[in-house]
Length: 306
Length: 211
Image (tube, rainbow over all chains, first blue to last red; front, side, top):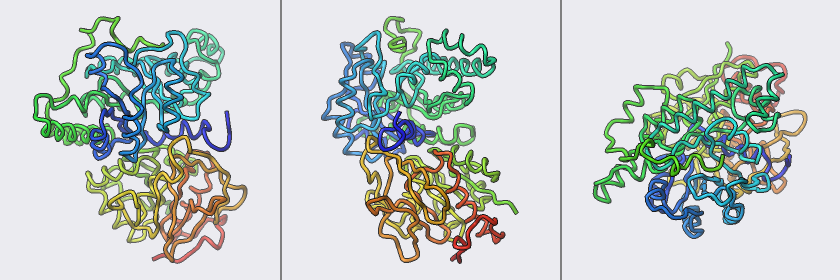
């Protein structure tokens, strides 16, 4: 771990600190990126397709086109993230080379390596990774992830998995906190994680990096729910640019801008029901979505890369 | 009277500022509403995304009251995004958000995230060892007005901390390092503005007249 200069752990984890209390929005065009920035997104995720379209399209989902990511990087002043396939360290090398601010090693894309994740400590660019529970989170942090997001089930607009994963993560943290020191080694063994990280979780009472919620957030209420459950910010994928279905293109953009702005406000005032009611007024239809229960387990994304 | 110091908590790393102030036994609290803003003796604008914080200030009608409080002498300190909000001139933004400090701020002046870095820096008004400074997609401060004093420069001469009367701006993030001396400097500014005698450890040079 470098102490000075660039790419230190402090600056990698530090950018995530700056994103806290914010909304990171999936965008597939420069126009989307500008709408997101204007609505107050703290970062954008540059993608070719939002998760619900990836799900619908089938086939192999890969890193987005370099040209698209570069165009989006040029079009906004907020940080830009992009996704690499789990274990695809060359996609990550390319994303680092073009200068994205964060790489998401993501289960939303098809896995490139079903055994190993990317050795994220070897990179200058910081990584965010998904988790379903404390064990997954600490394994990713041990590999070098400087930020964590609970996975949820991307592209569904169904919040149930996001809630399940956030509760599981905090349940795991509370278990570590209440355990006596002489039981931490066995907890580490059961979780298949380094003992030092378990000790760190006990000391801090939280993950040692920033934790956001992802996968299913479609309304301001969903975003505030995840914040009240202990998220430090949220990723919204399909929830913004799949809202306003059935409207004309121009009307849909207006509806999506309002949804984006309302979710940003809901994350700031997540503990204030009057304010949440206020920001929820005047919104159009949220994304239609698909219940996770209707998706065969083999097609659920969250079980990729554990 | 002990100062009450608020930290603007619309987005960003406000909790780290609150924690640092509390470690100094200062009455610190998060500010999201007009009522909370009204009870501050001093306010920190934290790191985060300046565009996000600016949008929320406007959306919740906090911008004008904040500007008025600062103009009437309330001490304010902007770190990174907070410094961008305070500046009168930000070339990358059509309209500077709060626009009270007579400086120009270049956003993302060092490049993208992979160019973020750490450095040991000497800061005027702070004694002892250099400050450990963390720069994250950091801005640079330039074209300081005649009432603005540079407090800290990098080896190449670029300014990363400055003070104009009741306003303090830093490009870096003292709230991330565990070094509390920048926060102590700000607490001294707040105490001075309240007319309370500065604590003995404050140097004479830090006492100055206010607008």
